[in-house]
Length: 101
Image (cartoon, rainbow, N blue to C red; front, side, top):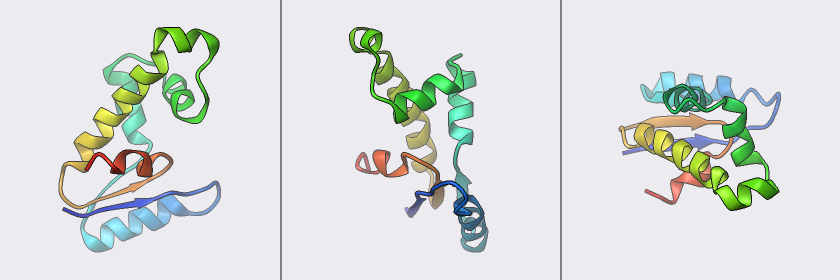
């Protein structure tokens, strides 16, 4: 099983590099589409999932554990994809989930 993660910044063409690499190696390629999938599957606005990763919890979230739930949903979806063989993941948080393997 091979997993390649590409963390990228804005305007770095990381998505293009990841897609070309996946095509050349005949690997699957995943990115932000994972967030969209979970957003629809669990009926959570995508912006809330992004905030869970990028921001510290708000006062209210500290007591409701909403952030932890959103991160668990994201983790589930990404790990589902990564459990398949030969994947290229590009975007933020890829490294965040790698230690589960």
